[in-house]
Image (cartoon, rainbow, N blue to C red; front, top):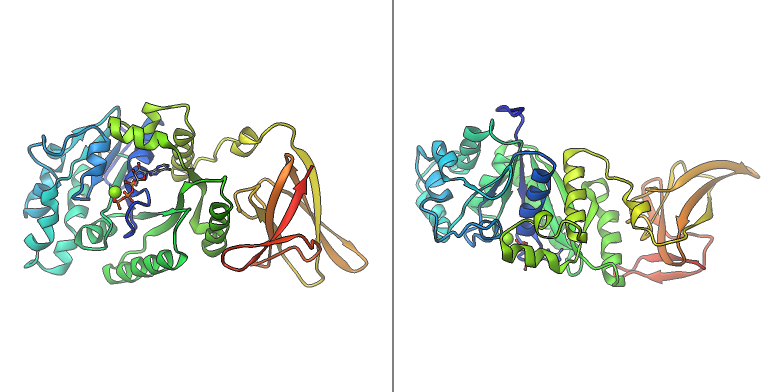
Length: 363
Ligand SMILES: Nc1ncnc2c1ncn2[C@@H]1O[C@H](COP(=O)(O)OP(=O)(O)OP(=O)(O)O)[C@@H](O)[C@H]1O
Ligand SMILES: [Mg+2]
């Protein structure tokens, strides 16, 4: 046993938008962390009970669920009894439709006490798990407040095919406001999900997301995969259902990032055959820091890029060496924190947001 009352990390999966892969992320991040040897509790705070179902537990068949834990004054102590096994090192605190009555049940309580119910319950089991992953419903009500109050970390899954940037910004504002009110400062990170790299639209959405939210975005992107729905239907995490799938690899990469472990050379592994060395240069007398980001490195500035600088005729030159397979790539430079197209390259395409992306063709 390595856990103690202070070492359990509580991570809330939050987004008021429906269908952006909150539950899929809660279940499969938990599954991947458990595969890596961590003891993980999934807390299903959504009355729809999708996480409970996706972990093979029938919400109709359990005697007690989180409602008993959260609704009653002394319920916190009962969390351990309510928890159901869902695989090796993996447990779930089940939900049920009755959870939708919690807000009304607690209406008379002091506001501070009302939002602390989950925090207090999790404190009771903190020595049993390294992680508690909390799946939230698609609204920002009392249940989500409880999750935010209990969590040190928040993951916001964002569907990379249809999301509106505005919605994500609003959500981050809401979380920041709430955090201030609750006197907490959670670490909030954004995860692109349902990503279909074959569509230009999705690639550009990903670029926008990285541009907008920078380091708050996980490097890992969760690709579109039918295996995730099939795994949920079978009631097991995808790591168990289809260990060799892209979906299992993506959630394993996310788990590695969450656990603070560097991902294993994913760039070189997934690249198609015969990458070549491509050298491009950026010249600017006034710039201090120049990086390159494009669909070749998941729009993470300078990731996988060998970078050097020198002077030519009084102007500083940044040289970027990329390893690229034949294909067409979109990219931009990040010059002292500002994103711009390549001034030396006339080939450009417009992104949906009206930015120009430079085009690089490797034959
Ligand atoms: N990467 C993916 N590839 C393909 N399908 C996915 C992926 N992620 C999630 N899905 C599917 O999309 C649907 C919505 O996902 P999920 O239930 O996880 O979203 P949610 O945010 O929890 O929704 P809600 O807001 O209703 O709780 C599900 O059918 C799920 O199987
Ligand atoms: Mg859900």
